[in-house]
Length: 145
Length: 310
Image 1 (cartoon, rainbow over the protein chains, first blue to last red):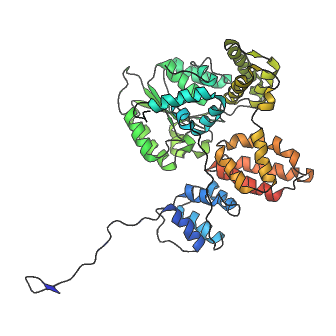
Image 2 (image 1 turned 90 degrees about the horizontal axis):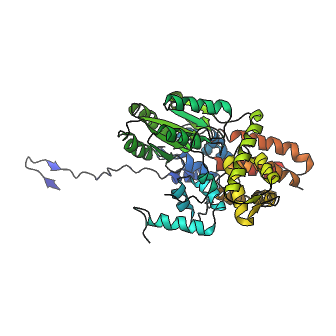
Image 3 (image 1 turned 60 degrees about the vertical axis):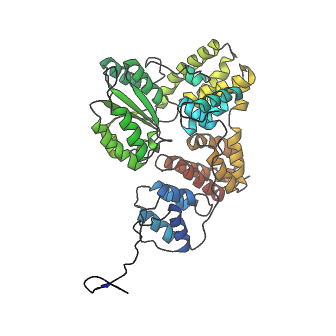
């Protein structure tokens, strides 16, 4: 115990974590499965939560309902899943688009979206894609080969 | 100079007169060009109908300094502030209005769209915005109200005239490229995919690359085989493969349009009315949902459980 100049006991102040811990978007998916109700919805991400539930056959129809009503508040969307789905582990491996070696280069070269780049990829010859990829790798600020 | 490997880029119309559009739409853009002004616009309609092309042609003809920002790749608030502010915040070298073409704007998050609302006003003296999108419902109301909305959803009665124009354009391209072609084969592809001009030209170039000439064999290689694989996954109840197929093919709207012809032969005739209702419902929903992939994945589950397969 320490005493200051005026004879008062110096109380040891507890250490506060000044950085509030924000929940990871995937924590909410876990909460829905575990039936744990969160206090804070600031980390809720509608896009990721809906995508996560769309990976499973038993939850994709629920995901599409929230996909349709995307203007609902995060709390309302969370509550929908929380009350509609039974307690269960909802982990599923994500289906991810397989990018070819050329997709990024085509997107950059023609200034088009991923969707259009995939269409272009089907049309371009391999040597043309290689030529585009070479230019992409040598671009200013890019990876130099 | 950029080497043009793709006909769709090489022969992209550089003027409004060259764009393949119904007369009323073309006249709207001609009037703007003649008045020498670009308005804030929202161009909405299906893929490949010429929204980006006409926006670029207008800027080119008026000599405006412009950039294209793709909303599907740069869709967050930070992108909007950084890219838009750095371009719109300076005067153009020729003293003309600058233009930002915000392509696939329906992929921009609602928060970023809200940020754009303020930026349109901040830079109104110096910069105009042209938004292009497939689904205008996904653009927030304050942006609608700040733009003139131009609809590229063509009436069926307008299609034959457009088909003639695109067919003539394709004949011209093939002649310039010295590719031998059957007019009937080209017309059939044009008829099938109008008004998606990008698809028509890409399918023809793809076949020309494989075969060296355009003949009736074109239909055999038009990319329907992949949709048939998708149908087979549904038929066997393999949701995991369906989901992977959807992730690999980022064109759910195109898949929907081709689905009926590819699925109907695999379904018990008694289930066909139900198939049509399910397909109709999910195609209708596609205009309103945030994420097209999820909608198509949900369709798969409905089709798997609601249809009797042969």
